[in-house]
Length: 252
Ligand code: ADP
Ligand code: MG
Image (cartoon, rainbow, N blue to C red; front, side, top):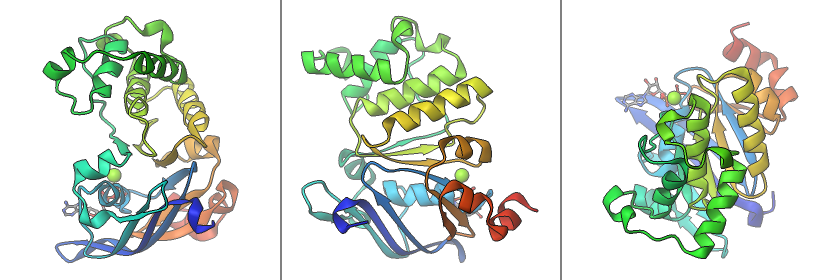
């Protein structure tokens, strides 16, 4: 990368819990508009890695730098979780936090008001620009036909897409997605892969996943985490065929 193409530079980051290094001298760079998949066995440090980026957890040492679009750099370790979120770094957790009794459309409106207090959001009136953005989001996550359905009636997969849509409505620059295909049918998994690929170039996306088949479908640059460290980074096939990766990740 040229420096200007990066959105995130993570250097020599270490984070211990009771003396155990969950993240151990991690170096990682994310490009603008890139779709990156992060894999690794249970306990590899994937969730801790996401926590460090979003400010939920502080590193013991090392640097996490956010490269703003205006060229200025920000030290993420100096910022609080909500400040990092406002910079345009959004995270989707595994359990969707949608309003079951509100419609799909209303859920996206609620996400626009940012503080996500339902009471305040009830008085939130979407502007013409908001309406256009909502239509675009509905189309992206392919829930146009479900717009008036209560979110609680959606399938598991559709709920996950709705939540991705709610984050997209906030126009994040970086989107972190934790195991988006967990619990999905094969068809839903495939559509989730298509959805993420359609976001490439518009957002910088990090997808944490342990399902190798899903990573294969996305087939973009893969970072393999192992014991809190980058074990291997590269194209899907390079990584999947690496003997060390096979050994630690696939147990073969
Ligand atoms: P992954 O998401 O790849 O499964 P995690 O980041 O959740 O891995 O965990 C990495 C290691 O750090 C694990 O051994 C886990 O037990 C430990 N760990 C994570 N968070 C904490 C915490 N808050 N307190 C103590 N240990 C933790
Ligand atoms: Mg995890």
